[in-house]
Image 1 (spheres, rainbow, N blue to C red):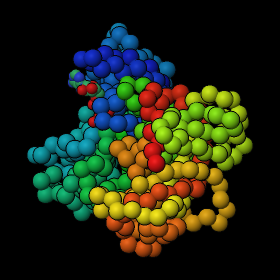
Image 2 (cartoon, rainbow, N blue to C red; image 1 turned 180 degrees about the vertical axis):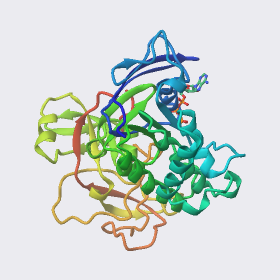
Image 3 (cartoon, rainbow, N blue to C red; image 1 turned 180 degrees about the horizontal axis):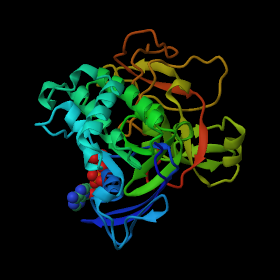
Length: 385
Ligand SMILES: Nc1ncnc2c1ncn2[C@@H]1O[C@H](COP(=O)(O)OP(=O)(O)OP(=O)(O)O)[C@@H](O)[C@H]1O
C-alpha cells in the first residue's frame, strides 16, 4: 500500500480563533506537526479528516477536492485519525477490533479475521487476539488501534499525539513500532506531537504551527538547526534572542547593558552587515561559557548567579558549562542564569557546588544570526548586569 498525496489549504474561524494553514505531503511522506497549545493543530487534523468544514477549508487528496463548499463525509475520505486514546470497541476482542475496520471496507469476515491476526503479529501482539481492551495495557491498546488504522490502508493517516498517554518506556516501544510500520506501509501521515524526539524519529519533515499559521516548514534537521521562532527554538533546545544588526555585530534590544554578539559564520556575517536589520541570534546552551567578573557579593536569592553577557564569540578550546543553561520561554531573555555548579569569585567552574552569592559573569559562545520575520515584536532580551 502507498498513501495518497495530500494538499490542504484550510481557512477556518472558530469562536475568534482563525486557522489559516497550508500543507502538502507527497505519497508516502511522514510529517510532524508541532505548535503551542491552542495553535490549531487538532483543528487542522479535524478539517483534513472532515470532522469540521467550511467553504475555505480545502483538502485535496490525490488531486480530488474533499473539502470546500461541498465536503465529502469523513468515512468516504480514506483518512484515518488516531488520537491520544485508542478508542477501541470495549465489547470486541483485539482481533475483532482490527477486523472491524477492514469489514467496514467490504472485506469478507474470514479474510478480515485472517488479516487481523497477521496485523496482531506485526504489532507484537500475536497471543493477545482474544483479549478485550480492558484486558490490555494502554500501550497494547494503542498498538491495536495502530493496527486497526493501518490495516484499512488509509490514503492519509493522521496521528494526534499518539504517544502522549503512554509512560516513557512504553512510548519508546510504540514510537519504534510506529516508525517501522509507517515505513513498511509507505503511509502518508501527519503526526501531531509535543516531542522533538517523535518528530526526529517518525518524520522527514517538520511543520511548526503557531496561532493558526505555519511559521516554519522544512526537513526536521533543518528546522531544528535553524529554528525561525522562539517556539521552534524551544523545541530545538536552543536560545533565540531578538536584536538588531549594529556595526557588524548583533545587539540586543537595549537596557543598561546591551548584549553584543559577534557573528560566527559567513552567513551570519552577511546578516549583520546591514545596520538596523532585525535579527535573531541563535545560541546553543552548550556553546556558552560563563566566567565570573569581580568579587562575589551576598545575594538574597541563595544559589543564584546574576550573569551578564558581555561577549559571545567562537572561542576554540573554550569549556562549555554543563549541565547546559536550560532554554525555556519562561527563563529567557536570559537576564538570570543559574549555572547549577559555579564557584563565586572565579572562572565559572562547572564542578563546584551552588553558590550563595551574586556575581557578574561574562559569557563566551557561538551565535548564529537569522532573520526574525515571525517573531513577535517586543520580545527582545532585556540585558541587565
Ligand atoms: N469545538 C470547538 N469549538 C470552538 N472552538 C474550538 C473548538 N475546538 C477548539 N477550539 C478553539 O480552537 C483553537 C485551536 O484549538 P486546537 O485544539 O486546534 O489547538 P491545538 O493546537 O490542537 O492545542 P493542544 O496542543 O492544546 O491540543 C483554540 O483557541 C480552541 O479554543
